Length: 188
Image (tube, rainbow, N blue to C red; front, side):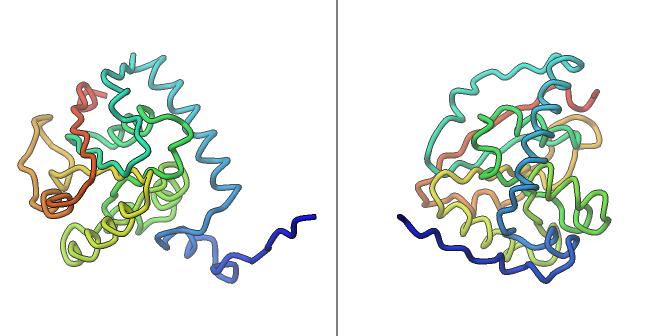
């Protein structure tokens, strides 16, 4: 009979909120279940209430690491991009989320870490460290990184100026970059 190793998670002695603030997070069956259930509900709501349509989703089906680069007008953008992915890729997709906003209050932290598996990304000081973490993630085949290169949401609905970080992240590397355009989220 094969022996199965059992090791407790490294962060077992930490408070749940502290565990959610860490990145990368330890795999957790409860979190995976909640994320999967949330994804199914969100996909249903997007299709029923927002007439959500994905054009070119076949371009997102790869076993290589992938960077999804999209415009950013609303918090719903991340949910739309995650809904475009196959459900089995949900736990290996990491949307970059502003650490100064999503990881400071418990309700936003819960939504960012559990529902969307967000990676904290520094928008001011610490951008290089965030990009370094992105590179580490992309070294694992099958990782999907979702980045909004404008660095923040558009206040007009128009595509803003891109920050240089995305170019530094992918330049000279064998990484698939999927440009995406999200239409209608500014009005949603």
